[in-house]
Length: 216
Ligand SMILES: *Cc1c(COP(=O)(O)O)cnc(C)c1O
Image 1 (cartoon, rainbow, N blue to C red):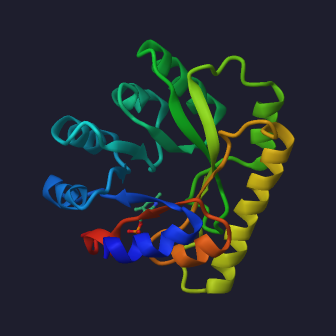
Image 2: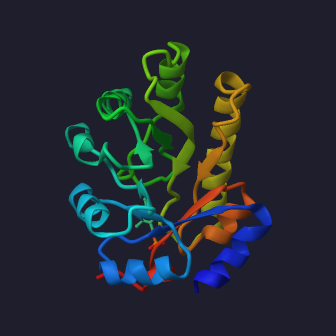
């Protein structure tokens, strides 16, 4: 399955985050053995344990909702946080990254789905943050945006939501990151909708069940 997915991603140079939440180390090592190095997790405790137990050249991505008071547990090693959804969280990430003398890549998570349960920034809040400038955030690199579409088989709806995230990315990029080569990522697309996400401009897909089998 990994090779098949990689073939789908190759024409657009889309990156694969293998979502290993609730899967054992053995399953991760199997993909690692096939060359996969980017893994994504949703829960802080689980992420920390896996980091400690698994090879150190794995690039760990935090993709699940993150509470400010838990940033300290992953700050020493996390490569990218996809789920930055408030100025307060970004500030905390910056503070903890600085304590460890490192930089953490961040994606701004936007609310694009209809369901109210999915968290995220509004465009208004992000603009408020970026208008102030990023001088106080020397230890984070804002790399782009992330979003989750509604969980539905309605492809038209999902497509519209992906288009919305792409439009938000373009707008934020042109307004605040024109001369910044680092603001380039659109993290969208999961097992059920990644091909559609790529058509709509995704640069990074987060795939779990298709790689590892269904979660319990
Ligand atoms: C679990 C999860 C995924 C992967 O979902 P699959 O449908 O198993 O591919 C992707 N993104 C986020 C934010 C998730 O929580």
